[in-house]
Length: 127
Image (cartoon, rainbow, N blue to C red; front, side, top):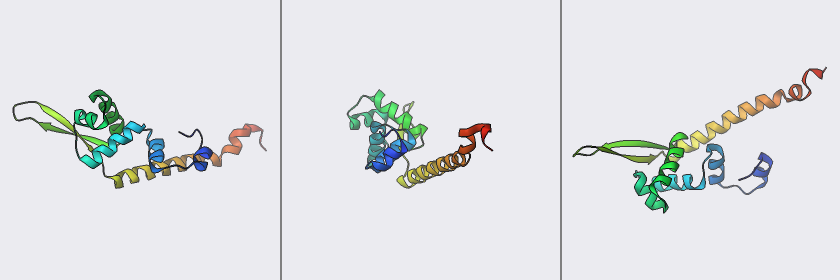
């Protein structure tokens, strides 16, 4: 991953790179999202099989995806008692909206800081 904005602007970035950067995801997290998107709701165990990883590893990715809003969990009851969870990927249009909203908020915050940078850099010494 790039270390600065100027590096990112010079690099040949892909959509995955942007999503990972904005949402703080790892490659495996994004792969898990794409599997859920193409296969529909899955349990952590089934997702792990698709990923070629243990259920616990799939679960960690699911937690990352839930925390950033790309996945939600549905509870299903079992007729003989008990329940299980299936994980569902949100629609890509919603992801696009979330990413744009995050970028807009970041832009507003950074623009505000840039507008007062001369005073912040020089402090009270400025005339």
